[in-house]
Amino acid sequence: QVQLVESGGGLVQPGGSLRLSCAASGRSISSYVMGWFRQAPGKEREFVAAMRWSDGSVYYGDSVKGLFTISRDTAKNTVYLRLNNLRPEDAAVYYCAAARPPNRVVRTASNYDYWGQGTQVTVSS
Image (tube, rainbow, N blue to C red; front, side):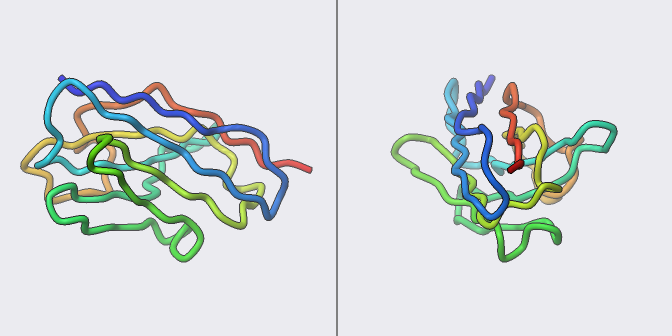
């Protein structure tokens, strides 16, 4: 089992930034893919970004490419998501997820095995 704990959400003005954190514990994630998804009210869960822990390969959803950045601290088993230039449409609950091998498909929520509790991001003036 992998436990995931997110933090860092909150209220931010349009154009502002946030950094979300997701700390993993329970077992080694060296062969996992760590992903971020978001879900706004009435919408489907959307892929945001992912990182393959073994080699640091990163993947982004089209709507956030160039705006958000995924990074990690391997010593802390923590993955981060930097949200820049936030827009009202970025408001959602952001979830961290972990996919155990085989994890060739990283953009599909159903391929992830473990999920965090989610952290709310609100973008409003």
